Structures are given as C-alpha cells and as structure tokens.
Length: 448
Image (cartoon, rainbow, N blue to C red; front, top):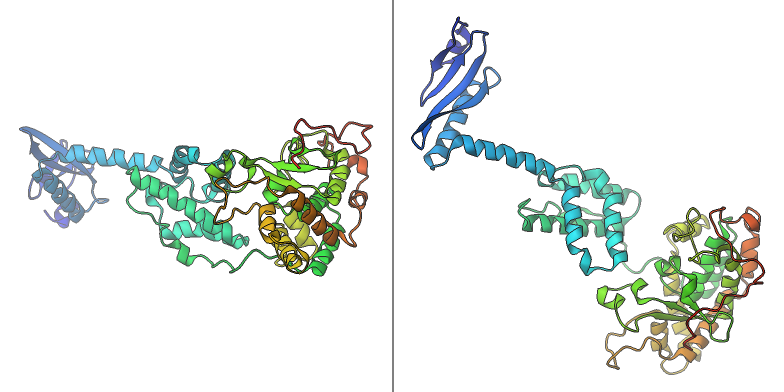
C-alpha cells in the first residue's frame, strides 16, 4: 500500500479493503471515508482494532500503531483490552488533580498536628496553590509549572511563605508517590530556584531610644484603637503576634487584684503537638501597670465579646494577621521592625540591663518569660510557673523603660478618626455600661 493508492481509492456501492502487511488494511466506505483497521487473533478468537481515519492518521502512523499493538499481542496480552485500560487510566489521572490529592494528604496527616496548625496548612494551600495549579492533574505538573506558582508568592515579598509552601507541595507529591498516583516529585529541587531568605532574625529595633521613637510614630497613625492598643500590648508582653491576636478575655486572671496574670493556653503556643498537649504547659505572662492600663482602655470597646483584639469585621475572629505589620509599614518602618521584633527587642535590651543591674539567673528568667525552652532541663519537668515574683519585677522594669515618654493608652483611643462610641464598627459588642474600667472576676485565681 502507498499514499498514492490510498488517495486514488474511490468510493464504491459497497465497502471494500486495501490491504497492507501484517493484517493492516484501509476500509473505504460508500460515503468516501477511509478507516484504518487491524485484524488479529487472540485466545482462538478473531478480533479487530480501529486506528483512526485517513488522512488524519497517515499510512506511516497506522503502521506504527499496528506494530505497537502486535508487540502487545506477542506478550500474550489483548491489545484492545490494553488500549481500553490505558484510556480509563488517563481519564482517572485527569481526575486526580493536585487539589484533590492535596486534600487527601491533609486529611491523612492532620491528626498529628494541632487544630490551629492543620487549618493554617490548608489555608495556605487554598490561598497560594490551588488557584494556580489546583485544577491540573498532579501527574502532569512539571517543575516550571510549580515554580510559577511559587514565583507568585515571591512577587508579593513573602519569601519565607514561598519556602514553607514549597515544603507542603513536596509533602503532597510524596504522598502521591506512595499512593501510586505519580512517580516523581517535580518540586524536589525547586528550593534552589527560590530567592534566598535574608540571613539573621526578623527585622527588629533593639535599642531603647529608637524603639520608643518607633512606638510614638506608629501610635500616631489613625488606625483603629484596637490595633494601636494591640501594638502597645504586644510590646509590653513580648509574646508572639499570633498569641496576641487570639487573646481571649477569659485567659486573664486577677485583673482587679495585686497579681494580674495572662495565662496563654498551651494549645495556643508555638510548638509541636506534644508541646501543645503538655500538662502544665500554659505560658504565664505577669501583667504590668502599663499592660493593665491598655486592657482597661480596650475593655469598653471589646469587653462584651470573647476576644481582646478582634477583627474589625467579625467580633468573634482575631484581628488580621497583617494589621500590626501594616501599622508599622505606614509609620515608615518597613524592613526595620516587624511585630515579632518586639521579642528580640525585649531579649536584647533586658539582657543588657541584666548584665549591668540584674541578679544571678536573670538571663534564664528572661528566656522563660519569652517561653523559650532550655536545651538542657535541670528539672525532670520544666516548671513554666517558676520565678513568678522575679518575672513580675523584670516585666515592670521593661514596661517602665519602654513607656517612658509614650502617651497614656487613653490617648490612643482618643486619637481615633471616629468618635470613641463608634470605634471598630457596629459589629463590636461593647462592654457592659457602668463598670468604670473594672474587670469582671474571672473563675481562675492568680498564680503569683
């Protein structure tokens, strides 16, 4: 058979065949169609396969298909069945999108994480990955396709987030490999293509005078009073920003007494699942006079709800993760200080103070106040409630130094662009009237 013979073949009243080698033939129909067919014998039965229509499938293409089918037949397999299974496998592979497999992975491994971390992982995939590659079959993803999704994260300056998302993408591919859905991980070497993180800690001002200047500049911003008071409270307590954002009123003890305390549940602290489930693992923050002043001024605004620093839109949700950072950016400190930087400021300034004026063991107590776990535990169980009297003294020393020259927290409320009575939006449920900044008595007693 040649292309000339095929082109010259004309339709007849009845269908007829033009034969080629090894049972390949072209069926010419009365309507003028020219269809490739291949006949073969399998398990004692005569069978046939269709290879498509000419000229879409050329003579050479038809011969390649015949040879491939013949190879399968010589291995003792039915080419028609193999073709059908391959089509079904391709359809199923198309259904196995990255998002579908990623959600299966997340459902499998989430039990080993805290609920908060599991939700954070899924949200990061939903925000940064699924919109880009979620609907693509996972088996068809290539390194350039995955890298393009990561570049979108880098483009907004979130280099650390890009690396964290890459780790999670790689975990999804590892799960898919184990499940037999894919054979390789296209994200395996992409870390080398991402922009490097700036070495060292997060930006932080660790000198007291410039730190006060930064606080003054940020607190002059016409942000919500809740945001400005949140920044002041974060600086005073040196907790992690996420711990502050989710602070609940029922976590505070003895606010009307002599030993006010913020008990942050272990489940909300940074660490693995063992840390979050640790008995006696609550982090205790002694509250200074200045910290109580912040709470007294925010109580009329948010005391009627569960959270101390709620979102502007929903009283039952924490303030935005970016609210404090944007406040510092607007004050002109982008790249110089971040909310997490107050921990470095507290550590640096207080350790320098301890060297000149402190007592023996103050450095270890400062680490305890930052919820740092010592590398070598002297006691069998790490006592997170230890040294509370000295911790109160150090916290007050820090607050006195930090707040020198800063305005009273009431001023931060009065600086609102709107009247105090409407601060924060009508979604806020204000504290009951008539308390005169007196807090309700909480169930738990102070652990002083």
